[in-house]
Length: 91
Image 1 (cartoon, rainbow, N blue to C red):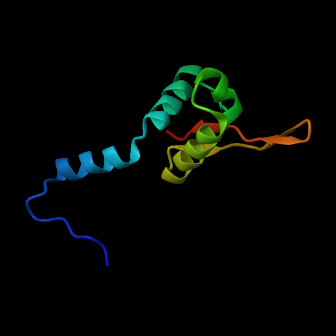
Image 2: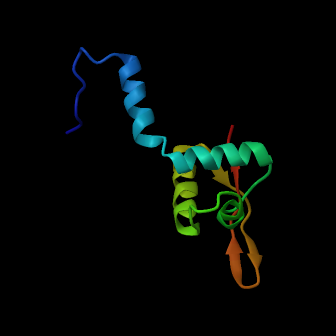
């Protein structure tokens, strides 16, 4: 059964709770990097830009941004036996 908000919780408080839950700092960094660079980027390319985060967390957060409708994957590319999946902001 879904939790209900009490009537004393305002719309602004609800929005703030949602932002606090879904706005992970790495996701914010990814979106800012994608806006700044201005072209589709893969997790491995973001790993060169956002040093210190790691490839696995970047892949996770890119997929999560895709689930939220913030970014979407473009055509998967095969490179030396591996696949590269660039994402573009869906604005």
